[in-house]
Length: 122
Image 1: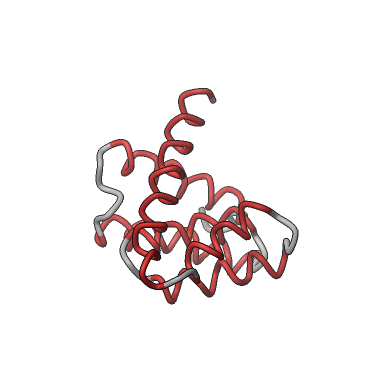
Image 2 (image 1 turned 120 degrees about the vertical axis):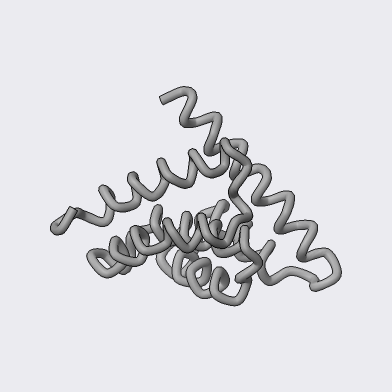
């Protein structure tokens, strides 16, 4: 995949991530750090690739790297200021500290359900 596009790299990362989620390994730092290089490489090809930014921020949230996830969510929202999903992610990451952990867990649970459901339909 030397000259892979951001979309190809994202698709490969998404498939690996879906498999990790289905196996219940979504909170494993080893799994996350094994998949992240695909997304990082894709973002080198296209720094504004929204699916890569979204997946990367989700994966960082899964392992508790919230500050790093905020950076990618912020970039997404800069690129799509009126997008409801982006705004939801941003508010979950930057919301009231007392409820933030719970809100993030609920958000990620919904994203995992969507990921595995959409894979079954495709």
